[in-house]
Length: 231
Image (cartoon, rainbow, N blue to C red; front, side, top):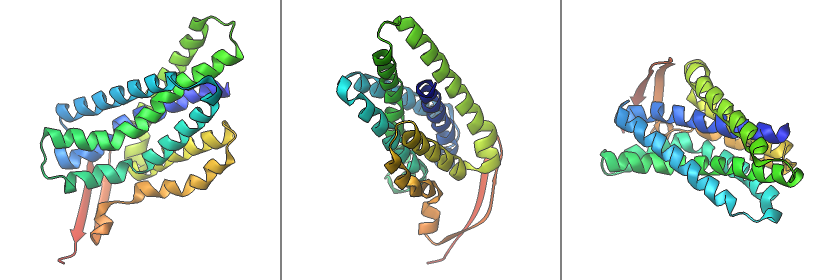
């Protein structure tokens, strides 16, 4: 049961990032179909690369690779929000190439790590029950992962962004990944990375001596009123 829960966690976290990223990028590029197409394409492409790379992991290193996938995904998720807000300001142009570069730099890493998780977990299931038909392993795993993706998308759209805010929602994703790595993979040292949950709260606004006068989010839009120092 704990192994199958990993499929749910990976799918939920990946879709949560996919839904959250366009909201953050909309302040720089607008909420357009092009932006959504880029985010979806990079998400699916990174997931595919992660799945393929996981298939190359030797059997004896499967458990270690699974744990590292969760840990690295937690680390990379913690910097998604800072990258999404900082990179559009420092890149030289605001064209299509810039949009692709920002999205790739921010999302490719965590999605790649999350994409490796299902393949690694399937390998573990096959080791524990080699006589079981592949369809009986892949079918439930795919179904649970898809259910996790649905829940992640709905949580991001109806709870994460409008109710608790993007920063806290990303912090919750980081926490869930670290807890899963520490509890299920029996790696207590994962808890030492818990301070990473504060990284999503960092924003270039604070680095530029900005004061946020008002911040409101709903299911449809995000409004932030910011006052910058004259210097």
